[in-house]
Length: 585
Image (cartoon, rainbow, N blue to C red; front, side, top):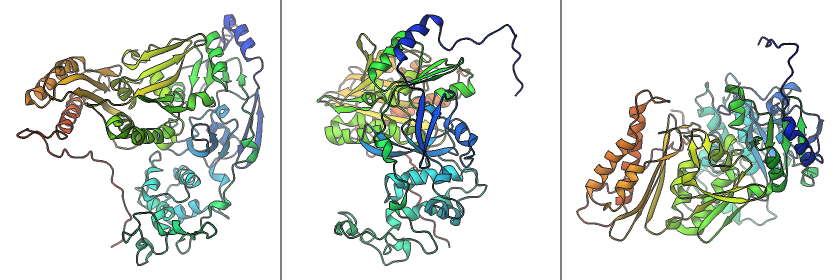
């Protein structure tokens, strides 16, 4: 790219305005400027880092070119590496598959970065590398390092994954050559179903799970603690032994997370480690950009030419990654990563029961197809809310469920109803000096029905065309007492269909005229013109109507009313089925 002509008399704009510079200096005077992390088992210490460099740029710059640059926006998975760290939410070590093209280098302080070069080479390959190669899971090879690292991350977290877990591990990786079949077949050799030498897939007569005797779990779990479980290794392959993996460096367990400050004339980067430090920075410099997973910010910088002169990374603040079950709501920290949120809402559904846990089931449904695993490993609910994307999969559920956002600044705490949070395209009610501390998600009340829907061009790893969270409250006479029909992708913001919601009030849900009247009201709510940004006006309207039509029949199917016109068993959503193993004919 040709250099930009600059007048010799001009000087770059300072990263921090003079009025705020002294205040920021006083707040961050004790901050460290040294980055400490481990790379493939080796300790790395860096001083005076460029705050704009990504982890991928650093890795390739030092010669670790196995990690590839593909789409540069976190969609293809070619740049996947593993970042191991102590998770303050689960209190365990978690090995996260991460898109290195999006991760800022300064975000890996106190963590262990593992690349494709760190797990094996051509002379001594790792079991994952060998099985993908020998199983013809690599053709052009460009995506292969990322695919191997996604599989490696899965095995580091669970050395005995299910067949379903293996398939889900690749939902953030794209391959244009193989058609995925040889990749999946090679990866499934690590699954629990293939780990038993007696299983039918391995040519045996059938293990306890195959023969229906594993309802209480695999018979191998009954072995005594001093009896090692022998995994089945396909002939000709290296045996996978979890005990020989790179350990999480013991010094990192004792690593003291210090507040960090890096910068140059173009950009300043801060990494507070407590809520108080974060709020102090926002109080003296409200326009500082808050960075969580950086999944949105890096795209804005690379493809929209946006510049943020001061950024604050909040990924290492434990207070923002907690959660708690209350009597009438679940409270989650704003920076709980989406992978943890998946397990939290599953626990919440069991904790509160099927009736009260409908909202958590809806959140889990949306998270299941929310981007890829690499994005969910770093993305956060606060990031979804603050960026105010009109097609966020989570925001409609938060609005429809009447969730409360807790915003904190240095001098006060504010509760903002989610129905009042979105003010315009990418605009919110969050004060400039405030941060999203937590979200309170109320349980579903008796007589309430809440469902979530999404339609995209492909099921996995794709943004929505239209999504929705639909909630109604119905009394014992089947009269609607409240309604909230919230859609994404139908306006510049996440928006409620107000006319349709108002029409439903006082109507008998089992009356066929209610369905027809609501559809007419939705037509008035979403009268999209053919020139609407994003296009597909007719299709998007059809999706909005279709979501409500399905929701309506799902409600009716739970009623026991004679002579009621309803779909007795609404068809289940069409999900990608487990592919199984291909048998040559």
